[in-house]
Length: 385
Image (cartoon, rainbow, N blue to C red; front, side):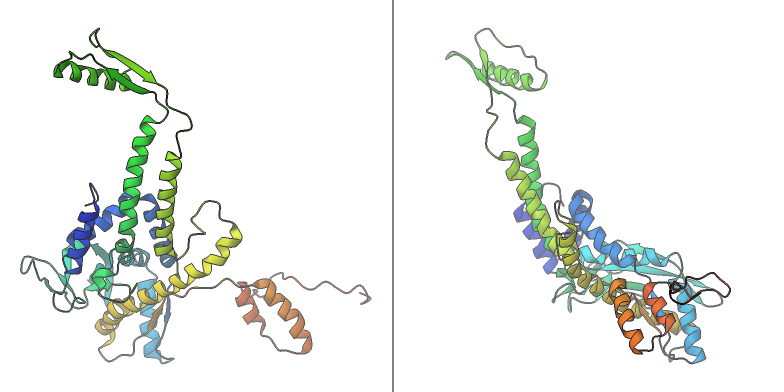
């Protein structure tokens, strides 16, 4: 789809996706990640920001049965396959949805043996409601068949209001991708001849069509082979190109950088952490916007995993009426240790009781082991000790 993409062809692809035919759109979304390094980079940053979060499981209550369910779920999300599952689900950011098949293993209990990402072109949205994903197979290759229960994890992030088929970031970035592709093509052609002298062939009034073709070939060969053969009645003149021939290269570069910045805004919500020349202070300020997107992505993915993984796991192993544990992907904000220290210095001497373990947790320090050497406040010079 990306090869030879034109504005008319892109418009046709997007209109077909609006009608539910997403095959060409999904192919284009895949090829955009393969061909555009900037789009692949910023999309990868957004994916890895979520996949790096540590999952947490909270039992429904303090009851022994609920704690047992939570412990079993912690074994599942703590397994080596879970991070890959998160990354596969986040493929939905670009394409609008992702479908991952759960391969169950039957033993003492039902547990996921592995998770298999499936090509999104195997699926289509229901033609009636536009919101129910169906699997295309030999039984029905047009409308598709319903997905088997407790078998699929379907993540369709709500990036904007409307139908899921219109929700992928690739749809937003497609126009920028097309413009950049044109700019790079023209820039490459410009760079190929920039600074080279103009080769001007001249032929006499009696030259035939064959003579003219011979001259054209000779002029072309001078640019590649630095050698050519032509009749004595023809000549080639070299006209030196001006070294100040406009801002051609800058125009192409500025256009490519501009569309890249728009893609960064669409995917990350900001440009400071990706643009060259941005200061660290600017990046820190704009990182808060990206943090909002990160929290939204984590919250939506956790809801999908609760629906399609936690619920069937608990129902299959512990019964249909059990209380379900909560699965979250919390975003831990960095602690301002300097501000916390200043507050403790002022408030503790005034009599504010503060639990030492809470402070250690806020600072990321473990509880000291019994008998371990610990740091102590310096002895006063006036204590007489």
